[in-house]
Length: 135
Ligand SMILES: [Zn+2]
Ligand SMILES: [Zn+2]
Image (cartoon, rainbow, N blue to C red; front, side, top):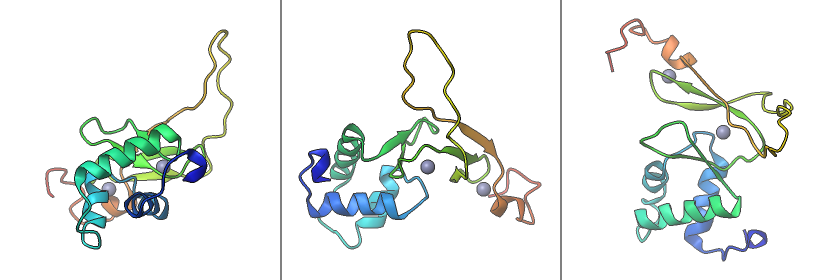
């Protein structure tokens, strides 16, 4: 964190640890809900501001999958995402993301973000999976 020019505080460290220890691509609300019980002084605004800071400093990325809830990823290696259209789970696609960028004169591509949509194993195994309206 210091290398990225961010002053580490307890709350910032907690947010970064949450991001890097999980693969659930949390929203700011999920991080807040996960940390608040141990950190009663943490506010939602702090979580939002911390996430914005991390993204600017290159410690995390925000995913443009869900236009209502911005999701964050603390895993910075190039990878693609799978989004379950039933439960909304976001998973990392294994062994992807290394393909060459297209040749495009004048453009320098820095990163790519590919999203696959489908049904995750949990939802496929649900007995009522045939009924998309059942929650
Ligand atoms: Zn699912
Ligand atoms: Zn990811």
